[in-house]
Image (cartoon, rainbow, N blue to C red; front, side, top):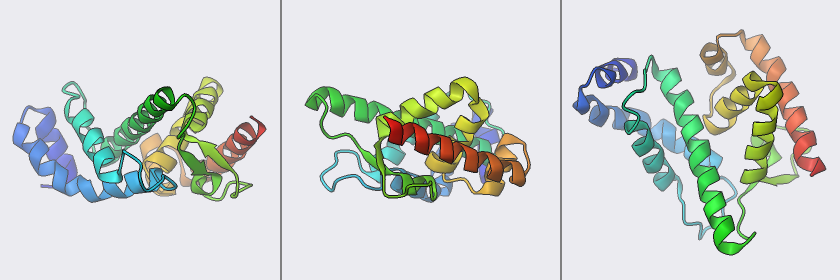
Length: 184
């Protein structure tokens, strides 16, 4: 079975479909986790494998999810991954009273105007929340591209827009995030 068929079976109550799903999605989730965690210190308590496991456990726990297809699954996984990273950063912040925030280079936002600048995961999260207030689609696009590792075409399909629209909105969102993250 492919991912979409397993998601459908899982949605319809076949618990074994969830077990069969993990090996099919694990590598892609792990690549996205590794990409999202780039720049972490070696001794960081959350590693890509642990992040994938936490994301998958949270996805499995969503019994009411209406899984439609592979892209939708990975789109939700990118949201969950972002939440896990933000929760982890907040926990570390509260433990260390401001220390140990995870740095994300703007280069990881795919060639933003100033690739040498760095931002913290909480700052990125807050900027995305701010962006979502006036342009939720751009915030979702960044989430899919950055946390989900979606290509332009996958993002376009997921958001039901053209690849040209994704490219244009991605450029605008990166510029806005760059300005927002470097001005604070």
